[in-house]
View 1 (cartoon, rainbow, N blue to C red):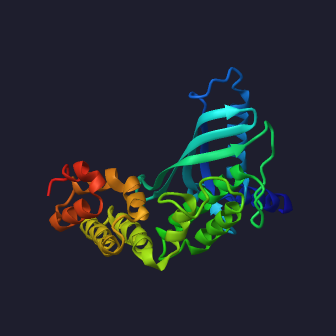
View 2: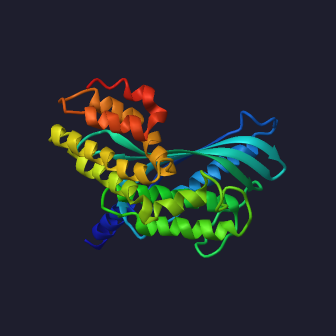
View 3: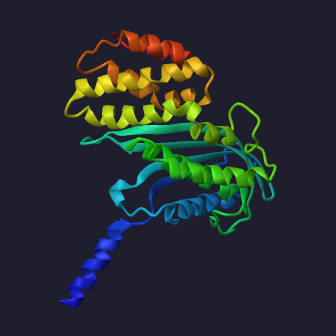
Length: 294
């Protein structure tokens, strides 16, 4: 009996783990003129291990509950141990009682610079800035965790966003680009606005759209669509205060295809008012909104 209990314990802990992410890291070096590609492969492997084996929260999740996400580094310059790149961050969350994963974030950071020596170990220290690469990755992990948590509970991601802001504050002291307070689209602005009450509609919309809308689509699709429309229309008050709000585009960068697909199919709803709202607050996707048949 003790052996059986021991076996069951190890089986349980193998399924229930503290790691929260199911992440894929890709390091694309096609734009870099470098004969020896091994350092890029090592970097990719090390980042995959770092992200997927580090404990980022106090949650214990089943494997199927882990957040699916990706980090794609496209290197644009490499000189010895100095790297320049862009970074595409994406994450998804499952939709209730379906096999569909809904995109939560799809964001391109163009200001990626870091130093790295092959086989250099990665460690996350929440109270100190030690490596710009570690700070970059850790910052976006907490952005992903925060946005995912917000989609399940009102303001559920606050603690994760606060950790991201702490990382940004520490990194800002380094003087490395991308962390500065000035500018219209950077890491400091992203987390500063995400936690600001001025932009509260973004986080409200994240919850209404996913938990009250998408998660109802399998059993009550009409109710789900109505809640999704309510979520979209909720952003109009933010647009009226801040018509060029960075977070509005951030939301639609991940949602445009999904919105077009969902409201082009299934039970019909009175979508005209919502289409007008979309054309007003997200004119950069005007061509896509025209494809929705109302």
